[in-house]
Length: 233
Ligand code: AR6
Image 1 (cartoon, rainbow, N blue to C red):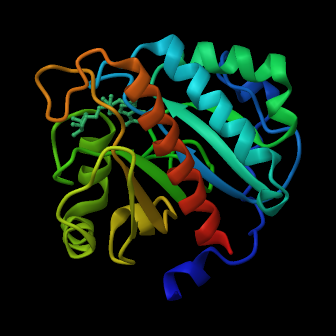
Image 2: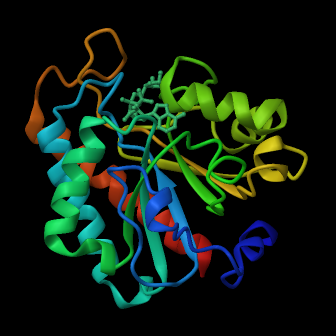
């Protein structure tokens, strides 16, 4: 609960609105001001090899549903990816712009999710991680970057919470105040999420079953956004 209090009321400078000329070409700024932002990567679309078109639709539907609920007023969701050429950023950015989601609290951002404050000048207190089922450090992608940036104390904090995670589930871990992720990046919570896996070389492979896959992806996004919302209450 202490950790929840850290989120508290919106802080000044929290809204990641940037000047138009600073924005990477495929970033869309929030067009309303509020305060508390979840930064999240596109679940399952790199190492887990999920189809991008299907993933974009599920993400947009989940984002739309979340932002339409009164109880989530003032909360913002920001999709982050490393490269301005990211296929998912471009797809999702395009659909979001068409649907006017940027006025409702959705944005995309190009950059490293572990350096949003030090490099991006943003303050996203909650970030999401594309975890593996053993909640282990390393592996690659966002998981490796977050565990590396957060240090040993965060690895211990994760282990204390849970040993494994099931597809579609989330595990919320408060970031220890001694962690560089807390000190340098102002991140107070990491939400581990396990998305659906279509990679034959990884556990829980769905072997191309996109009926199950889309259902699990939908559940993963819903659980992620609900965990974020819960933290802010
Ligand atoms: N900052 C922002 N976005 C990133 C970063 C970063 N530092 N690194 C990668 N991305 P992935 P998955 C983007 O592979 O497909 C791991 O090995 C990336 O471009 O991290 O769910 C775990 O241990 C892509 O758009 O997640 C799991 O076993 C998105 O993040 C497995 O990968 C997700 O890519 C999970 O695979």
